[in-house]
Structures are given as C-alpha cells and as structure tokens.
Amino acid sequence: MPYTPEEARLLAMPDDDYMNDEQLAFFRDRLLEEKAQVEEHLREVRAAMASHERDSDELDQAAFEEELRLQLRQADRETRLLANIEAALRRIDADDYGYCAETGEPIGLPRLLLRPTAKLCLEAKERQEQRENHYRKTRGEG
Image 1 (cartoon, rainbow, N blue to C red):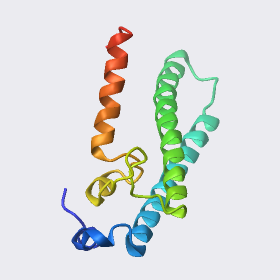
Image 2 (cartoon, one colour):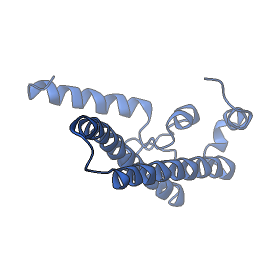
Image 3 (spheres, rainbow, N blue to C red):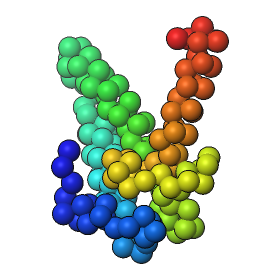
Image 4 (cartoon, one colour):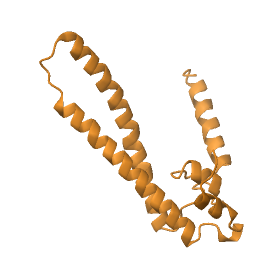
C-alpha cells in the first residue's frame, strides 16, 4: 500500500525525532477520525435494529435475524476497537504512545500507520501470539 505524502514525510523523519509533536498530532487526528467513523457506524446499526418491524413474515424475520446476528458481531468488534482507540488516545496524552507496552522500545511508524492502536512492537506481538497458540494447544482448542 503506497503511503500518502504526509505519511511519507513522517517516515522520512530521523529516528531521533520519533514521536515528535507532528507525529503525535498526525496519529491523534487519525485516531479521532477512526473513532468518529466507528461511532457513526454503531449509531447506524442501533438505528437499523430499532427500526425493524417485528410483524413481518417468517422468511423476512429469519433474514433479518441473520443480518442482525452479523451486525451484532461487527458491532462487538467495533466496540472493542473503540476501546482500543480511546486507550491509544490516552497513551498520546500520557506521552506513552508509539512505545511497546512490554519492552518500552519504539513500535515504529510503519506498524503504527497500519495499526494506529498498536501497543506492542512486532516482536512482542509475535511472542504474545505464540503464547496464545501454545495455550490453545495445551487446552485442546487448536
């Protein structure tokens, strides 16, 4: 995925400028924009659920219930995403944004551009996933 000119400018900054005011402002804006989009979609889902008429025929009702099930799963994912966005914004306010919660090392701009809510560097995230996979296997879930 090619970078926007603004993203390319951030990536071109020297390593010792990591998480400078311009970078923090960029990620705050990106997170706030994503938060607004998620909140709008959740409002749309709630409105769609509230507006459905319950007295339709069985086939319509079954189709609606299937669509509702899918929308609720999506809304659940988006609700978790919203919490992650809010946590990332709090990390910006606390000057912790962009640094791995496990190692304290920089997460890196390329990873943050792909996932602005990231709180682990790539190496720590891989270790976490390995632990989760091992746990699932030892419990017979994998």
